[in-house]
Length: 68
Image (tube, rainbow, N blue to C red; front, side, top):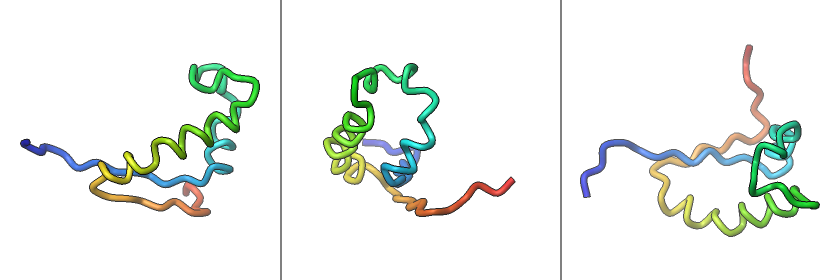
């Protein structure tokens, strides 16, 4: 298979991800449940190994802040 680009996995801790998307759960169909936090955790657990397998590069974010 011809590869024309690299793929990146940007690692984000669950609590950080929840904080980032807290204002738009309603625009995320998979999170339209009574417990969106639990659903997101389940999705991450289910998909993590596939994402890691397919990623050419893994970028951990940790507690880094965006510089303005």
